[in-house]
Length: 449
Image (cartoon, rainbow, N blue to C red; front, side, top):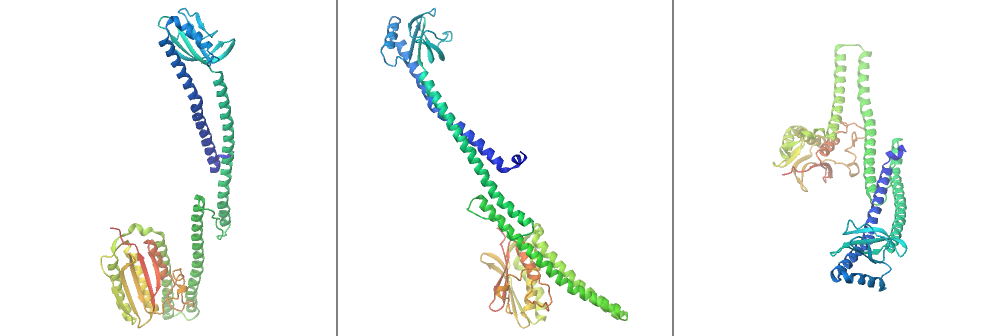
């Protein structure tokens, strides 16, 4: 019973059943009013018309003879009712042995009357006469009552059949819903047990199919994120173990030998440098988390993207020159986006750091801000070795490095930060073949208005 009260399928079935019953009742009422109601109206109309015709066209003396004629002409006389009463209520002519009280006349009434030795239902119109007395005109309703009974039986039988079909349809509806929900629950149970690979079967194109597709996309994203977390955990363990082992080794070496001030000072400085590298690693991880969380979206402001690029380019000109690299900046003004100046500046700086580090001396780096297929774009193009096409989708993963031996400085977070920053601004990072070199492009939506 508790399950029925809490089951949405049971509630839907109950609502569907009540709606079906209400529909049956409504249809029955319409059908009844369209049959019996019309018949009753036609009978009343005929009775009143016949009454007024008798009163208007026949005088007092001829009324009795006219009634006798109508009762003996053989035209529907077995169903017609006529009765003339004098002022004292005594019968003068007619075919009724009993009749209702005439105190409320004129009126249209339905009553049991005694006619031809039997009791029958009748529809009667009691019409007072100007010269005194009452004229009763009516119609025997025995046949109408039989028709009414047949119709009621038909409606009852139809209602029972419809109700059974409604219940069967409701139960089938509930079974279908529970089956579709059962697929979702079984998949959820498998995922809860630790297996992230199952997906909900998608059949058809109904609301459940659309929901299942959305859930499957969500599960794909969750599985991807969990894989990323596992990868990040492994990479962090690898990247932390080496500097921590180095710090421990240097400190241990300083303690094992003669503890002179220069030796201890050197060991302390080396340890501090390694610790600073670890701090920078965690700062970059926090920067990625902050960009992905969207928390800084509240700090977005209207800014000129060209000015941001020009400022960062000017800052890196000396660094590029010292590295033997030619850096050119093309940053027209009035290219407006909504965003966080510090995040975007940091993203451009990360792209320039990578270009300078991997392009090598003698290369050329071109930074340009402008439009790209209707969106705002920041492109950093170098003529260095570039990134193989098969690796471009991987280099935005945290700690992923083309340098598998990890001999070059860095921790594989630069492009991850840029990608997270672009995503937090409703944009994306696109890596293209520069032929030669690489084009790293941040695409952002233009500010509205």
